[in-house]
Image (cartoon, one colour):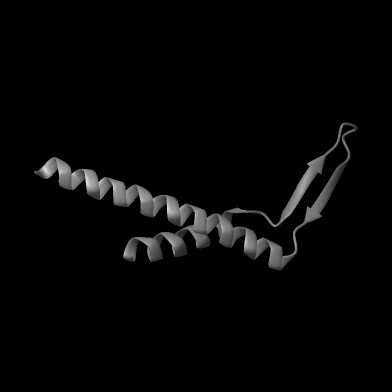
Length: 73
């Protein structure tokens, strides 16, 4: 349980820090345009990615501990 909580908050804060809310796109002619994601969509996107990362980490830790116990016998 502690692993899930720590991985959720850590991944949420890292995604919040490193994902840009404004995306710049360049078309074939070299014209650039900015696409800004609204705050509610941005936070839900980060929440979705953070939950997926948390589930992945919890499964990896569970499998690691399970195989570690089998190896100790």
